[in-house]
Image 1 (tube, rainbow, N blue to C red):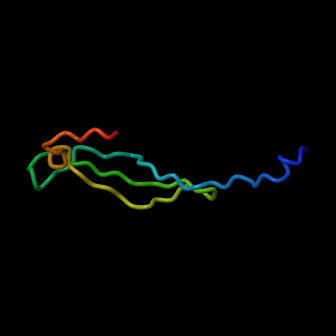
Image 2: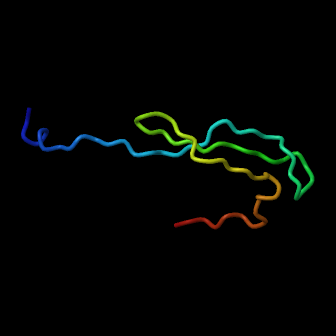
Image 3: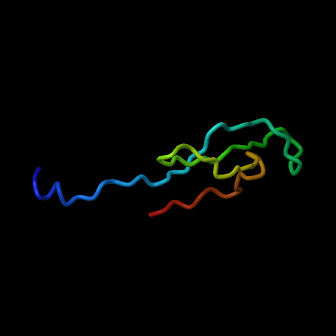
Length: 72
């Protein structure tokens, strides 16, 4: 084993939240249409998967009128 290899610390896993299992076609009371969605936000840890929370929204109500400004 080389000296450089012996000094390296082992890698640790960092949680990476992601979205899984999107449920679409839910009723949106604001725009009176079946355009809502709900999804669970999950995080992967070395011990397993944990549900962090849930996110709800509407594809019609949450659509901005102005396009997103391009970033440099």
